[in-house]
Image 1 (cartoon, rainbow, N blue to C red):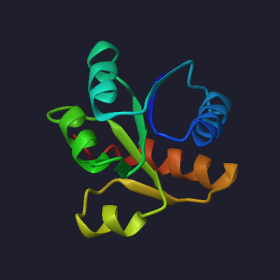
Image 2: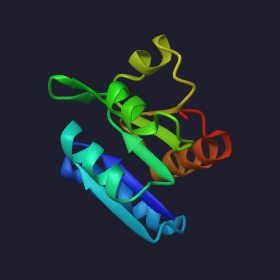
Image 3: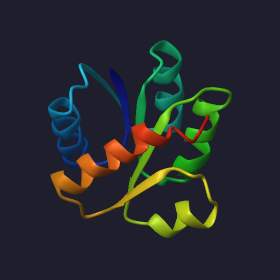
Image 4: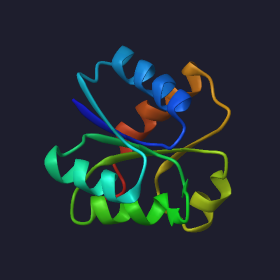
Length: 118
């Protein structure tokens, strides 16, 4: 399975990657900008996307919507601003920062079970 992590903080990216690899994801791509995320998703269709809501001046929610348009992809927002995801009702799973491995694993399980951004 392939995952795409959209996150600007390298420390958080590494934590998410460790959890995903523990859960059996064999390949993981990383993106720190909307452009890189869209390009990466175009090259390798991710089974799961984890994303921060705030990507500088861009919206992680809008980036994920663009990537997922017409596709069924599991989405997990890992963010310090969970209310931003909830107020637009994306249907995606949200894990608030700070998080622990168990919370992230639970979020991945819930996201892969629902696959709502398609």
